[in-house]
Length: 99
Image 1 (cartoon, one colour):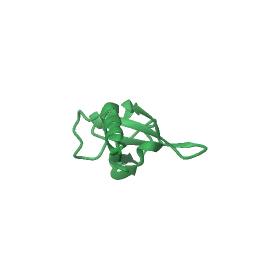
Image 2: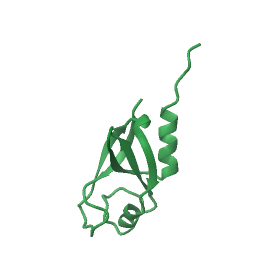
Image 3: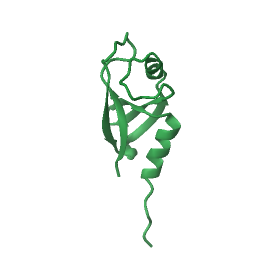
């Protein structure tokens, strides 16, 4: 089962950011392929500075997900604290056992 999250796209959070450099998009993630979730503090700083798209609360936190792609992984940044994202990933991965 896939989980719908909101990804922060565009820009490079390690360099100087400018307004309108980032966008928000829906992304569907397979929880079985997520190998790591950690907080993305730089994105939170950019949000506090008003450099992320409108509509985000100043108190939003962000998480970086590392997704397994075989020999390598890919990182995406999503809206939500690591604890909340992890809970979403765990909840969607529960299955009803038939027996």
